[in-house]
Amino acid sequence: MHDDNSQGVLPPSSSATSTPSLRKTRTTNMTTTDTPIYLNSTYCIHERVENLLSLMTIQEKVGQMFQVQLYPTANGTLDKNSSDEMIGNKHMTHFNLVGDVTSARETAELVNTAQQRAKDTRLGIPLTLSSDPRHHFTENIGTGFQAGSFSQWPETLGLAALRDPALVRKFAEVAREEYIAVGLRAALHPQVDLATEPRWARLGNTWGEDATLTSELIVEYIKGFQGEKLGPHSVTTVTKHFPGGGPMENGEDSHFTYGKNQTYPGNNLEYHLIPFRAAIAAGARQMMPYYSRPIGTKYEPVGFSFNKQIVTDLLREELGFEGIVVTDWGLITDAVILGQDMPARAWGLENTTELYRAQRIIEAGCDQFGGEARPELLVQLVQEGKVSEERIDISVRRLLREKFLLGLFDNPFVDPEAAERVVGNDYFARLGNDAQRRAYTLLSNKENILPLKPHTSVETKFYIEGFNATFMAARNLTVVDTPEAADVALLRLQAPYEPRPGGFEARYHAGSLEFSDEEKARQATIFAAVPTIVDIILDRPAAIPEVIEGANAVLGSFGSGSEAFLDVVFGVSQPEGKLPFDLPRSNKAVEDGMEDVPFDTRNPVFKFGHGLRYRDVCEESGRTC
Image (cartoon, rainbow, N blue to C red; front, side, top):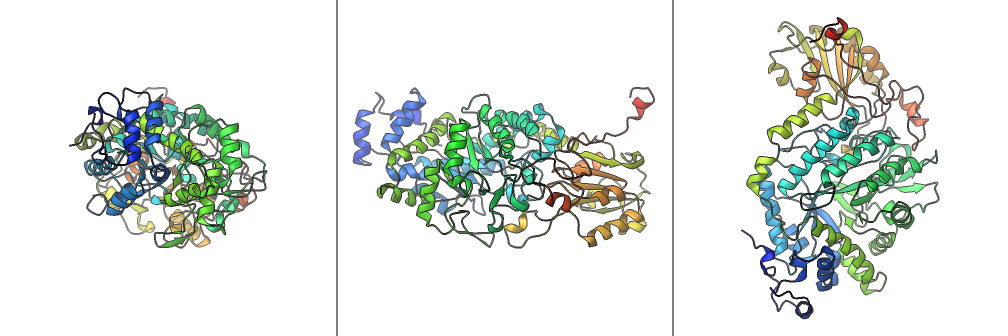
C-alpha cells in the first residue's frame, strides 16, 4: 500500500531534479544507498533533524508552525482544502482531527489517506494528528468530543473524585492505545487549570480545586500517554493552559471579549503554577498558554501567548521548560465559529495588525500557532527582517524532533483492521464503565434511602427527569407522568448555569451557580410530592443547598451515563467518589471570594473531599457477606 522509506527511495515527488538546492544538498548528504539522512533511521535523531532542516525552504519551515482542524467530509474522506491547500500549498503537517470517531476503521483509513498525501509532497514530512479529549462521557461537546466508538470514561473531575493515581495511569494507557490505533499521536490535554473560580465555564475538564491532588494525578496522566520515554508507541501531550486558566475575572471565559481578563486579587499566581511544575518534572512535552491577559500583576496585560514575560521568562527560564509551546486557537485571524462572529483572541492587542500579532507570538517564545493557517505572515516577517530565519529554525527543530521521536518518519501509517479490534474493545469498555460508576459521589442519603432495593417491585412507580424512560423499561420498571402518581422520583439535573446566546458561546455553561427562583419552586413541588433522588451533573460547583435540603438523597456525577446512574441507585455499583471542589452555599458567596484563591467561599454546603458511602449492613451486624 505504501513505500517504506527505509528502503532507499525518496518520497514520490522528490526526484533528483526537484530543485537545485535539494540536488546540491543531496550530493553532500548521501548515504551509500542514496537515501537522505533524514529518511535513514540508522542516523541519530539530531543528525536527521539537521539534515532535513538544511533541505527546507522558508515556506516549508513555517508550514510546520501552524496547526488547524482536519475535517473529514460527510462520507469520511479527506476534504480537498486540507489535502491540496493545507498539506500541498501551505506545507502544513500538524492537524487537529475533529468529529466523533464512530468507526475506528474509517478513521484509520482517513488518517492513512492524509499521511499518503503528506508523503507525496517534496520532502514527505509526515503529519502529526492531534485530538481534544474524546474518551469522556459528556453532554457538552464545546470543549471535547463524545466518546463515539472509544471507551467511555468519566470526565477528569470524575477521575479526581476517585483520587486513584493508578486508575489515572490505566485510563491514560487505554486512551493512548486507542489514539495510536487510529493514528492520533498528540493529545491537546491534560487541562491542569485549578478550579479556584467556581463560575468559570471550563472547570469540567479540570481536576478540581486542589493543586496537590491535581499534580499527583496529572503526573500519571502524562506518563500514561507518553510512556516513561517518548517513542514510537507514545502520544505526546499538551499541558494547558499556562500559567493556569482558573482565576478568570468574574468567572467569565477568555474565548469571549467580555472574559479577557485574568485576575489575582489574592496574589496567588504561584498556587496555579504548582501543577505545571509537576507536569514539567514528569516530562511534559508541550505547553499551551491561555487566551487571557493578566490584570494587576507585574506582567504586561496582553494575552499569555503574546507575553514574553510569561512564555520565555516564566515558563522557559524560571520553570525550565524546554519543549514545544503551541498557542491556543485563533490568536491572529477573526473567524466565524458555529455561525458566531469570533474576533481573534488578541487580548490587549486588539487594534494591531495580523502581522504584528504573529511577530509578538514569535517574540514571546511560542513555537506553533494553534487554529491558524497563515504561514505567509511568517514568510513576510522573515523577508522584512523582523524575524530571523534562525529564530524560525529554533521552533521548527523542536517540532521536527517530536515527529522523529514519535517514529512518524519511519512509519506514519496505521492498520485499519487492528484499529477496529483495539478501539472500544470489551476490556477497555469495561474499565471505563466501571470508572463511571465508581466516580459517583454520594452527597446526602437521608435514612439510608439508597441504595434502592435491586429487586424493586414492578408495582413501584417512578417519576423521572433528565434521562430516557427506555432505560427504566429495560429493567422492567414502571414510569409515570407526574410526581403525584409516583412512589419515587429519579431526577438527573444539569448543574445550574445561565444560557448564553450564539452558536459557540451557547456551549459554555457560565453565569450563576444557583437555579432560578422558578426552577427552585418547581423542584420543591416534586420534593414535597414524592421521595426524590437527585443526580446533579457537576460540570461546575453547583450552589444547591435547597436541593440537599429537599431531596431524600443527592448524588454528584462527573460524566456518567444513565445506565451508570441506575446501577448506583439500585446498588449494583457503589459510589466511591469524593468532591474535587467545594460546593458553595450561594452565588453571592462565590462573588465575595477571590478568583485566584482556593477554598475561600464562606460556609460551603460541602467541602472538598466530602463523599458518603452506602451503609454496609453485613459489617454492622458483625457478619461478612
